[in-house]
Length: 97
Image 1 (cartoon, one colour):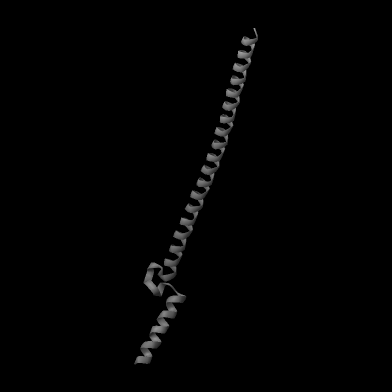
Image 2 (image 1 turned 180 degrees about the horizontal axis):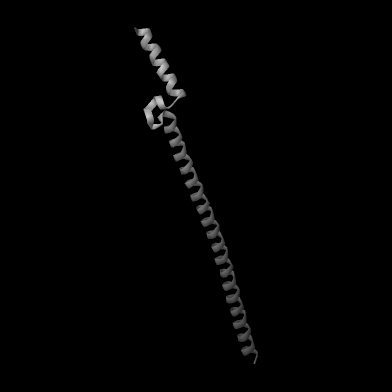
């Protein structure tokens, strides 16, 4: 009797591995659950890749904006320096007259 029970258990387990219908009846069985899980993992991976691309794009935009700000700051400094030189020149002109 024990041997028959053991043989039946091994047979049923083997059938579940080969044919998923034996695992959970008409629901699709063990392999269907794995396929569903794999689909979920693939979907999550896709979402992660999209989010990563958005982060990379945002980082690139921030770097470009930072470079524009630095360029503007250099222009402002150059204009200020030019105005300072002009003021010195005007002062020297007034002093020489």
